Every structure is written in structure tokens, then in C-alpha cells.
Amino acid sequence: MSAAGECGSFTVESAGRALAEACRSAGLDSSDTSLLRLGSNAVYSLPSARVIVRIGRSAADLPQVERVARVARWLAGVDFPATQLVPGLDQPLVVCGRTATFWVSEQDREEYASLPEVADLIRQFHWLEEPESLGLQAYDPLAEWDERMAGLAGVSADDREFLGQRAEELRKLYGRLDFVLPYGIIHADANVGNVIRDRDGGAILIDLDSVSLGQREWDLVLTALYYERYGWHTREQYEAFVFHYGFDVMNWPGYPVLADLRELLMVAWLGGKVDGEPEVRVEFDRRIRAVRTDGDRHDWRPL
Image (tube, rainbow, N blue to C red; front, side):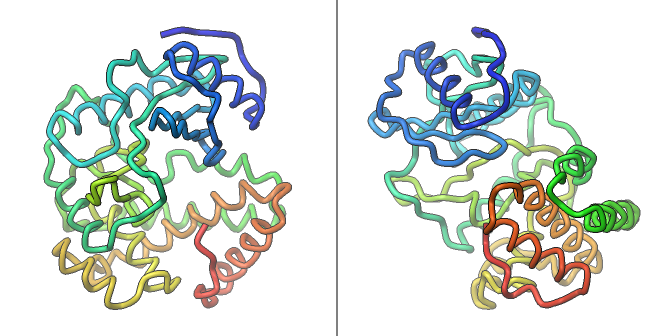
């Protein structure tokens, strides 16, 4: 593991400097790099090497990144179809005060799996028995709520107050839920956007950042929300998902609370991105208005 000085705020420029240093350390050519997205991580593609590089915001997150790397190596060891670290590299690295990991690029073009494949993969994932060596933590959906609220500087004080009060209400309701599925390993952000097709056409699970121990219902609620509230999945697609997983979370009495909580987290996440992004501001305003008035959500745009 190498270390370097701090690179300042997390921008395209500073992440790019960390990328260049990380690639030099790993012996990879970064001349044809393209930025895929800048969010919690800066994600880059190195097409000629078929590598995806993830640059994290801060070296302070190294323990979490190391845990993600352990999860990836464990899944590879049990032949579970998931995103894989590039073999033969000493990683994660710390460069310019940020973390860096290198992942095998599984696609030449973006393609997502079908909902039945998503359900099959989630069910297979839930069957796994994780070793204690992974050091997985218990999942708490509101564990980072204070940090998320601190990022809402571009949101009105009234909306921030509403989000905070609603989070506390849902925290109490969540604590009273009677879950029916077995407790165990969860992906914690399971949805069609995190199951892609590899070059051979197989479905693989990606984005292992939040893998933890928790309630399995949490891994089903996003797909239900996308169908029931937003219309992003059709009824036929959702019924196929339920059939393949073997459980309909919408028939569980705790579903409305879980759905409200997941939705609130989505809205707050978007609220942290409104500054300088007019389209995001419009979408946030649409969503917060619907949540506050219990309005229709079918005009929400997938982001």
C-alpha cells in the first residue's frame, strides 16, 4: 500500500490526479481513461486494459474499502457471479489521500439483467453463509443519516426539517417491525441497476460497498418500490421477480414502513446533489413535494 499527501476537495480534477497516481503504482496505462461517474466514488474505465478503477473520497474510508475487497475475494472463492478485483495487484491502494481499487471490466456496452435474473441472484446471495473473517457489520439504514443531512446545504430549511422529522418517525417504526425472512447477509442496495450482464451474457452482482448483515426484506423493497410507486417495472416484470425469489415483500405488513424509509433515503440522497445541477434540483423538488403531500410518484425520473 502506498500513501501520498492530501489532494483537497473531491473534484474531477483531484480524482483524476489520484487516478493517474494509482495507475502508475499498479503499472497500468491511464492514457485512454474515461470518467463514468463522480459520486461517492469516482469511477473510471480503462478500455484497453478492460479495467474499472474506483477512486474513493478519502483514505479515512480505507477500512470499509478493505472490507469490500474481502467480500469480492470471498465471492470469487465460492464462485458466486459478482464483480471481481483485478488479480495480481496489491489493493486497495491509498494515493493522494484517497483509496483506489481496480476491478475487472465485465462489459463493452451497458446492459442490465432481467428481473427474474435479479431475483435469482439475490436469492442465491441470501443462501450464502459468510465467514466471520469478512468482518461484516449489522446494517442500519439510518446509520449515516446525520452525514446525509449535513450535505443538504442546497435544500430549504423547511424541507430539511421535514426530512429530519420524518426520518425520526421512520426510525421508531423500523425498530418495531416484525421481520419474517431469515437474518443474514444482504447486498443492501439490491436492484436491477446493480445486476449487469457480463460479456458471456451471464448476470453478475456489482456494487458491493454496502454488503452487510441484515434483514433480507431490505434487498427486496427497491424492486417493489420501482413497480408499485414509480411504475419503472411493469406488473408482469414484478410478478416474475416475486416468482423467482419466492416471496412478495408487498404482502408483508411491514412493507409500507420499509418502502417509506427507502424512499426517504433516495430523496435525501438526491437533495445532496442539487447545487449547480438544475435538472437534479427540478427532480428533487418534484420528489419532496410528492413525499410531503403523499402525491403521485409516477412522474419521478430514474436517476
